[in-house]
Length: 548
Ligand code: GTP
Ligand code: MG
Image (cartoon, rainbow, N blue to C red; front, top):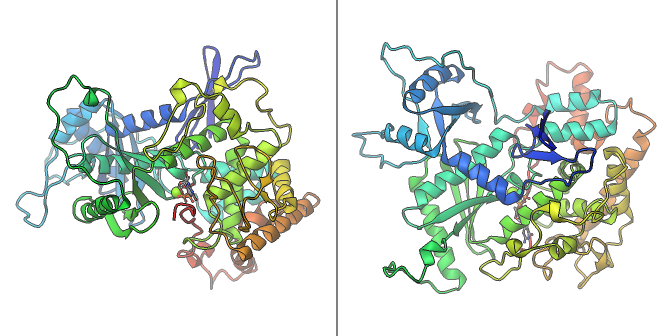
């Protein structure tokens, strides 16, 4: 759903289905330069929202009146969103008007007194105790605006809706709108980051916990995993030479060992001190040590690493390219969905491609069509304010504010989504994977530096191949599946009556489709819902490869 407002020179589109409810300023007919909201601005806005928000577990959706009445006695409330987790527990995400408001409500919170098994912890996740008080609290006629805000769109309903579309382009747009991470999903992910930041800040001064990956790059779906990085954000003021009192600090050597131990400590803290954190796993021997856990209060799987800022800059790059051409995210969502359906991607890591390199393949294709500028162009247009070099010396400098790109760096496509998707599959059907590498730096195929079956250049570390884990067999399967997809799309241009017409034949798992046919043939008594049969078989993605 999207709404257009006019504000001064610009049309402002508030797109509720966009991953972080981003506001996109559209170009007016008079060709006023387009104004972009940068990744850094979105992140700052989301972090500020999280600092003035609280997640409250409640009995049910009908607790809204009472909770609103109780909290508004202390503070002024901006918005309240409702959601359920997979345990069918109900939660309200409350955004207060200011951070100070949140402080006053936090002072009214208490812990499980007298319970010796519980060590108190302050975090933005609380619960609302039932009360015998006679006082009737109400929200004074205000209504809960969002219900079930974090729920995924039902797969059965989605496929029925796709069936009813008139064109393949409409199907692609619908798939994007119904499955992309929504505003509540994005807010909750920043709350998970905020919770860690609050709990860890007593041990690590000025720690920042930043989301990266598909939760923030504009390509994530509802329910995608949450990638987080713990990083140290020392301000200039803190490092000023005029300050004469300096903290005594522990120095660790620059090898991986100390970082592994920090991650071990964080793993223990997750188990002992972070409400909702469960199933903590430490993967400490990877190139970037990570700790995985599930945050059950929000229903999200988290991958946490230390100081790996290049992931955040990569997200900023993907976000920038995605916001430049809306067709990009729509195509990428369809391609990622197709790859999961034909099992090119898998729920666990292995010798197959993952969502991140697939997204680079989509962006690369759009660059070859001149619809997107190359990454080299973004580097050339960078100013002083764009310089970013990570602690491990990775240069992540490129222009962030895309309104500074010179005109004609890219051209709007005259093709609709259907044509672009077909061209995407045809392009890779003919791509010479044996000789060529995919490089979004150059935006054209380059000669492969080695004989690995699939070579996709990491734009921030050009010496690395982000798909170096992909085996020969998996690369062959990729080549076969892009050809099949191109044939399928070409065939359905003449026939949109078939029950797998358009992208249905690409994004619905073949087994699911077979069972649906059975259902339609009247076997409802035996099979209640196709979705129920695949509860444990949701296509997900796997962590990256050149990081291992
Ligand atoms: P999904 O989690 O599958 O929705 O997609 P994702 O884009 O979040 O991918 P993933 O969780 O695997 O990785 C998170 C982020 O880490 C990516 O968006 C990239 O920024 C970065 N990343 C992933 N794989 C690689 C890789 O192979 N090399 C490098 N350098 N970075 C990677
Ligand atoms: Mg991810």
